Each structure stands twice: as structure tokens, then as C-alpha cells.
Image (tube, rainbow, N blue to C red; front, side, top):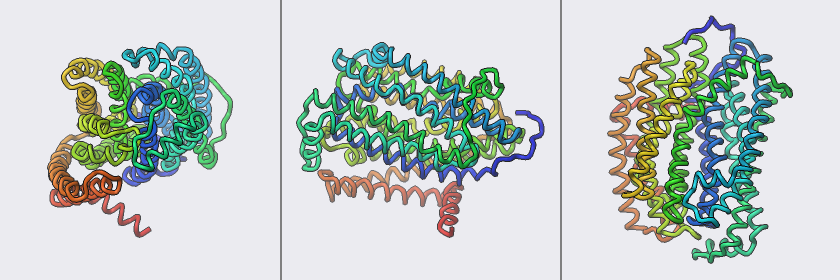
Length: 555
């Protein structure tokens, strides 16, 4: 982690990680709520079965690239290179690098998109070999419709990296909200246009609290409309950031120079970074492969459960990682190892403080939460039980998932992309073996459990290796924070169980207001107990958040 003495930075001074993470967290919270609304609509109109299994499988490829680009490899590689070029060389070379990356990605991803459209039948067969011919044909059609989403999300990721390096976090974090809005509004309009009889009948049944009839042919037309919404949502995700880019001073130039050192640095870091951050999504692909052999429903159940778990990962893990990366990249570029270690340790502690209770809450309150969010229309109580089982297993890995979002980019900041890539490849192999071992006795629950075990082991191994790479990084404070948070979360779990049982006995779970009262009351009780336990145990992160809230009220 050595470099020449830096020139004065032309970029704005970085915000504190906690402040930047709070901005990103609020923006991501908005996005996750809209994403949850989108999943709610899918559950009501399509339930868990043939049609939605096909849609989930078709969306796996573009969603994989979305996670890698927007929250992973491209973002980490570009932010690190762009921030250091902006810091050392000034704005003009940095803007040129941004234009080079835009042009190169447009060409590369354009070719990949064309290949993906042509190879869609083989892609579906690899992801879901257990699908029937009819189900595979639907998944293939949907894959071809949604594959161009890759280009939009790649360009959106570059825009996000530029803005983050300039200290702008809120607008790029809100980009996913625009994606969800576009996919919901355009998707529903297209679905009503393509299958009006099904959509109208389902809407009436949902409003009346009844189970709607199912027309397989109409459902296939309707889900095609939702796939068209994904494309428009991707366009909005990129387009909403263009005004902010112009305000930041960026002016696009149509240039392409494959020999440019900056462009080569981005791709040299990005290729192993893809391997380093791909484990979670590749493991989801593996789960999909095994789940496709379990009949109709398991692919959908796992997807609904994983979407719920992505809520705290996005709000906490991704938000903290997004805010941390520019700061540690600058510290690494200036050879300030103490600053690097302090920032990273603070970020990891904050992630533990927020994600451990989130994991416990999802595991304990999974069934009432899923009943509240999903159980209506074509999503019945049996689907709720099956999805809750998957969620409780996924929740065990929530902390690991979130810490990986922070730890993997930390290696890129110190010019080490190979280590997380190796760990990722190892975890993919282990997950495949665990899936094969667990799917027999535990079904779809075993697939979720194997992914969680691997994510936790991945995070622990990354941290151990980073300690060897950065000798100023110390684990003592983190282990103490972890112990305190676990004790507080255990108290919270007991409070949630008692409150949920009592509220369910008083109100029941038959109607939406009753479910809402049970979930909100249980979360409020558990949150109060967690905050009180953390205060008694003197968890420093609680005071940090309290100070931030007080400052915000004063301003």
C-alpha cells in the first residue's frame, strides 16, 4: 500500500462514512420498499408456480450483472481507479477515463447481450435443467426480452461510480428506485394491455380477499408485460443520473483507446473483482439449478425469501460499503494505513450492529412478515409457510452477505483483487457440494441453508486474510462488538417471540390490518429491547447513530 506523495485533491472533501452511509441507506431504503412493492404485485398476480418460476429464472442473468455492476465488481474497480486519478491528476484526465469506460462497456456489453439473446435456450437449460419443455420455453422467451437490461445497468454503474467518487451518494442510490418504479408502472400497463381479462379478474379478487381463477395462457402474456417493464426500468435507472453527472462537470466524449493505462487498470481490477463478488449470486444460480428439480414452487419460494433478505443487505450492507469505498481508496492511495484501518473497522462494526438484529428478526418473525407482505391473491398460506422456512435459513447468512459487500472492495482498494476472487471460487465449489448434500433431506430449505453457511465462512476468511494484508487492522474491537450485539440480539429475539405470540392471540392473522399490527408491534417491542440492551452493554455504534439523529433534527 505505497504510492508517491499526492497532489492536492481537486475533489470535494469526503463525508464521514456514517453520514454518507445514512444518505445511501435512506435512498436504498426507498428502493427496497419499491422493490418489495414489486414483489408483492408478482405474488398477488402470479403466486408461486410455473409462470413466476420461469420469470425468476429468466431474470437471473440480468440480475446477476446488476448486482455485480451496481453493487460489486465494476463499481468497486471504477471507483477505486477514478477516485485516485481525480485525486492525483485532476478532473480532465478523470473525465477522459470515464468516457473511455462508458464507450468500452457499451461495446463489450452490447456484444454480450447479442450473444445472450441467441444463446437463451442453452442458458435456461443450464440454470433450470428440471423445467418441463413448456416451462423452459417460457423462460427462454422472457430471457430474450430482458437480456438488454445488461447494457443499461452497466452504464448506470459507471454513472454511480463517478458520482460516488465526487461525494454524491443520494442520487445514484436512488437510481434503483427509478428502476422499480419503471418496472412496476410500465410492467403493469403492459400486462393489462396483453392480458386484460386475467389482470382485471385478479385485481377484483385481491380487493375482495378471494383467490382468483388462473388462466395459464393469459398468465404467460401478462408476465411478458412485466418483462417489458424491466427494460424500461433499466433505462430509467441510468437516465435519472444524467443530470447529476452534468452538474458534477462530466461531458461525454466518444473515444476508445484500449491501450489507455486507466482503462486497463479498471478492467484489470474488474475481472478478478467479478470473481470476488460473484459468489453470492452464482450460489443463487446453483440453488436455482437444484430447486428446478423439486417441482413447481421452490424456485419462487427461494426468490421471495431472498428478496426479503436483500432488504437489510441493501439498506445496511450496500449502503455502508458504498460510503466506505471512496474513503478507503483515498487512504490506500495516500499510504495512510491507520486511516484505512480505522475507517474499515468502523464500517464493519456499524454493519454488525445493524445486520445481526436484522437477521434475528427475520428468522424469528419470518412467517408473520411474509403473510403481511405476500399472502394475497395467488400466494396462499402454504406458500407463506414454505417461503418462511427458506427465509429463516437465508437469515443465518445475512451478516456474512453484508460483510462481504464491505470486505471484498477493501482488497481492491489495496490493489489485491486476487484474494477475494480465490475465496469466491472456493465458496462456489463448497456451496455446490453442500447443496447436493442438503437438498435431499431438507428440500428447498437446505439450498438456502447451504448458501448462508458459505456466505458466513466467506466473510470470516476474507477478514482473516485482510488482517494479514493490512497489519494495522485489529480484530479485538470487532469481536467485542460482535459479542455485545449477539447478547442484545438474543434478548431482542425473546421479546419478539413473546410480543408476536401475544399480539397474534389478541388480533389473529386473518386480515391485513391484523397482520400489520402483529408485525409492527413485534418489531417495535424487539427494537426497544435491542436498543436498551445495547445501551446497557455500552455499544458505541448506538451512540454514534443517536448523535447523527440529533444533529439531523437540529439542522
